[in-house]
Length: 141
Image (cartoon, rainbow, N blue to C red; front, side):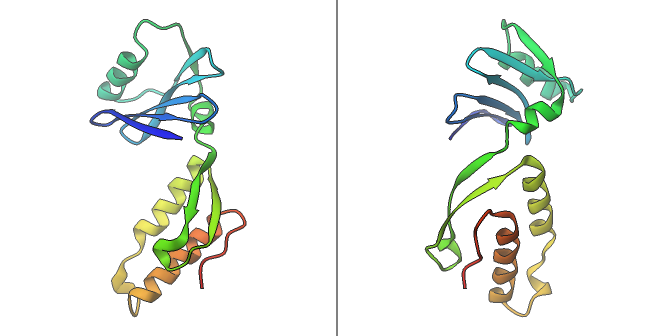
């Protein structure tokens, strides 16, 4: 997978299967799929996001699809995760849906280090949360 920043708040994700997903701000809103088809979300977005989509798809024959279809394109093994940032070298493959990702970031974002006795307790909790979302992975010990 490759990520390319086109402009502020405009990003393309290139998946290994040839799919290209266009993201405006933090939302996938359009894509190139199946090697020949351009799609855009039927969802109504802000004027700025609509301008981003229209510019990205300018001059193309585009099919309008439900947002859920574009969200489903985000389901992929994100990357090989190295837990070394948490003190281990265990390697696991992480598979997140966009819903999983949103929920995980919501949970982790709600944590405040002051809620914990020390940095290690905070780190341990985050590792445990990731372990719940990562297939076949155990948090490092």
